[in-house]
Image (cartoon, rainbow, N blue to C red):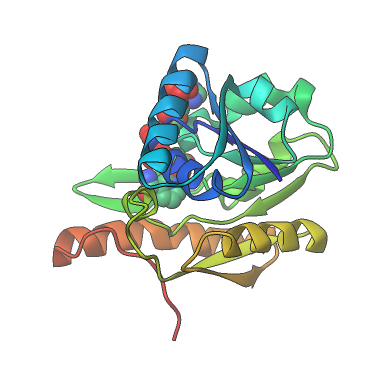
Length: 217
Ligand SMILES: NC(=O)c1ccc[n+]([C@@H]2O[C@H](COP(=O)([O-])OP(=O)(O)OC[C@H]3O[C@@H](n4cnc5c(N)ncnc54)[C@H](OP(=O)(O)O)[C@@H]3O)[C@@H](O)[C@H]2O)c1
């Protein structure tokens, strides 16, 4: 599968790229080609040093979208709308994955959803009609994901209105060893999943347990 990671140069973009590039064709997207290429070189080196072969290419965000079957929106909430504007002409039948969590910080973190209820519902409204959006990966720690020697053991809650797209994302979750996909409901349920992330960050801060994730038992 061809996967574009927009903002793939960032914290969680790195982990997703490293974990998927051993099995899929990954396009690391950025606003700047040089930055995408620098990240790609870094990721390729990490994987090659651990003996893995990978398929990974650096591009500007619109090129990454144009070449992909699946597009991950991996930019901070504040910049999602402007990022979507730049990729709109390249959206056809790709599946879009939102991992976006709107949060604000005031000593501790709080979930700060937009009027539409959550980032995913807002993003749905920004995308052209018919584009399939799935919400996932919000509660996965970027640090743990990017440490390819770290054995993961967490659930990934998936929300979406299109069963076929949900299944594609579920398979992409399974392609990362140690991540377990769990369907959480339609897209509007994403508000609950997104809101877990600031809780995890606060728990990490106040209990000194770093990079927490979710595992349902
Ligand atoms: N970090 C985590 O543990 C984690 C976990 C789950 C979900 N998330 C969600 O994943 C998303 C990315 O998080 P992150 O921690 O990886 O963020 P980040 O490292 O701060 O930023 C990711 C990328 O966003 C791009 N970006 C920055 N400013 C931008 C702007 N003005 N316009 C367009 N793109 C811009 C940058 O790419 P270029 O400069 O290369 O364009 C940057 O590398 C967020 O929505 C976050 O809520 C994060």
